[in-house]
Amino acid sequence: MPFRLTPRDSAFYEMFTEAGRNVAEAADLIAGLMEPYSNREAIAKDLREKEQTGDTVTHRILRQLNTSFVTPFDREDIYRLAAALDDVVDAIEAAADFVVLSGLGRLPLLMGDQIALLRRSAGETAEAMSRLSTLRDLEPYWIEVNRLENEADRVYRKLLTKLFSGDYEALETLKLREVADQLEEAADGLEHVAHAVETIAVKES
Image 1 (cartoon, rainbow, N blue to C red):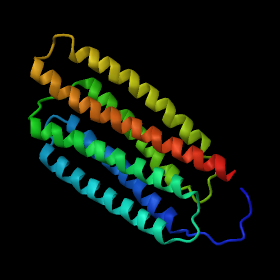
Image 2 (image 1 turned 90 degrees about the vertical axis):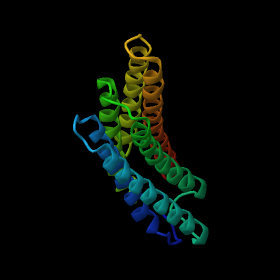
Image 3 (image 1 turned 180 degrees about the vertical axis):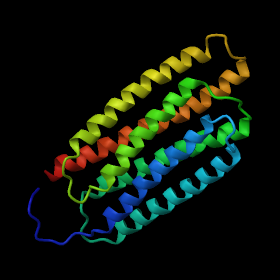
Image 4 (image 1 turned 90 degrees about the horizontal axis):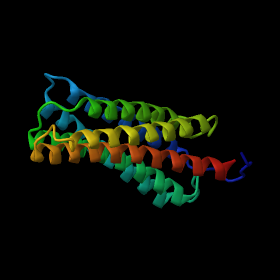
């Protein structure tokens, strides 16, 4: 990493760590939807709070960005990373909210596979955010998240095939498709986070 004579605002590291932790907690919460006797309304409520927490952290990052003379990374990369983290929580919250509002019953097992991959990727992301200050050994992180996203794509395609196989009524198919799409969007969002980190690491190396 190049030597810098100018001090850089380190507050961003703490906020990105907080945002990464919030992403992982949101992914853990939505896993509860797969449990037969879970309180889905309570899960959706908790996820709304996580979404609000994510918005708050994002706004803090942007305020810091607007008031800092020197930033640890390029400003556009900070904005891109903050927005990508926020988008992940938004998609997770939207999936849970739709499950409750639409009155869906038991979710397909393949949707559980989607969520399991999401949790793994979110965990990797949270751990990586805590190491942004050093940017050390991050390549395995973005490689693994890319791999998990590719696996999530395969699961998503299998789920769509199942939904349109005739085993579900038309309205239920549409409802489940909406949830599957939101979960896929969250997985894509985590890959966008990884790409943002990779860009930062390359620029700073």
